[in-house]
Image (cartoon, rainbow, N blue to C red; front, side):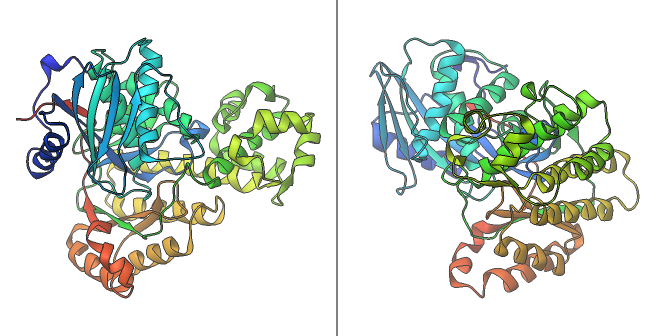
Length: 460
């Protein structure tokens, strides 16, 4: 359980030095008082299991050591004052007496914070929010696929809970924050928020849904994970790519259910079809080949097959920012989801059984995952593909995009003894030839170890 500020502990390892001092100084300069408490929520790297959490399938992420950190004081001002140590993110103030509104068409940093505030307010039925002054600092590169936006929502949820003296478990917080990020229009599945709260230092986690639970996954000795940013930014809430994939999976669910005589009206996730049919993942892949054609589906064909009107299609299946889409690649998206779900289970099985060739086996699964993301889910981009190719040529046994894609980061697994030569080779081949990338290289290429989860703490 997270509890009231009277029982707060000291800062987690790695937060006891410079970042905290800088944040405290910024806070005191801005507000003329010391913070009452701090909260942090980590970003994450998904090792395998891309774009399948919102389809109901398990994923295998670990928290990274980069995080969102907030310094907070509580007052009777009747307002929530937000500031950011990064000058490109402007200050924002909102009244506690007004309904909190989040503008979906304008995904500014403070709206992500307000998602977390609104989620806790609604869950805990808080009629009058406590006034707060907050300064936020982030060490997760924004729009990089390492979940900076979800970490900000989680941090805000934690801050709001503490400031209003409520008590919620980590599981409850994860579920609240997964739901409330949808206020900004992103229809995610809950992986990012779950690992941000449930992470533990030194271990990856298998995150399962319905019910939400997290199981330790021991990563192999002798391998290191390196994150590399392709330096192309992708904001999920500002573009429709992500939600189009969510919609395509939703439609594929209905089409597969219909073909097997199930009540498609109550099924929304591909995992639900497998459960209803009591089928294996291999059998679901066969069903996809049998039922769904590889050519894109038109709206008319989908409506005819499902027996729904064009209006029902728009209101029941599409989201606000996917109303313009006319064609849908159902075969490819479903094929990726079921094959990726199988790869997650194989990845965990290899980690659990620790065979002699485990590093090579895990690397093969990562490579298959990237190929599926690139070719079937079409969520990569030329720069990511180039970076993954360079990583493999530089000594990685496995390399794949991580996060939503269309930019952001790759994660690579490297034998421990090759890390230094790998970093140098990637630096020379991808970053140094391009002045913009070269300037970003220090924060774009780094070794990552499994970090701890979200926390509330005081200085000391």
